[in-house]
Length: 150
Image (cartoon, rainbow, N blue to C red; front, side, top):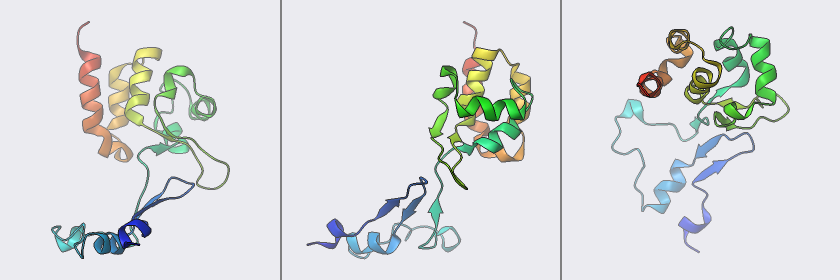
C-alpha cells in the first residue's frame, strides 16, 4: 500500500478537535511540507491543534449577558435553543469537562436583532469586546445587511 492511503493526515476526535499530521502530509506529497513557504515564525508545530470555529456556551452567556437574556437565561436558552438560534449552533455539546456546545456569535447576534429586536448599538458593543475581536469584520458585514432598508 502507498503511504498516502494508510497515513491519517487529519484526525478529528470526539470533542471536535482537529489534528493535522504534518509529517504524514510531507510523506504523502513526496517530502513537501504544507508550511514550507510560510515564514519560520508562522509555521505550526507538528502537534498544533485547530479548535472548531465557534465560542463555547459559558463564554457566549457571559458576553451576551443582558442582551436578550441574563447570563443564566442564556445558559438555559442555549441548552434547548429556540428555532431562531439553531442556525448559530456550530457544534453540539456533550457531558463532561470541555464539552460545552460551540456557537457562531455573528449568527447568534443576527438572530437577536431579527427575532428579539435588540438594538444594533447594544450588539456592536459586545463585538468590540476582546473575545470577539476576530469576529468583528464578519459582524460588520452581517450588520450591513441588517442596516439596509427593506
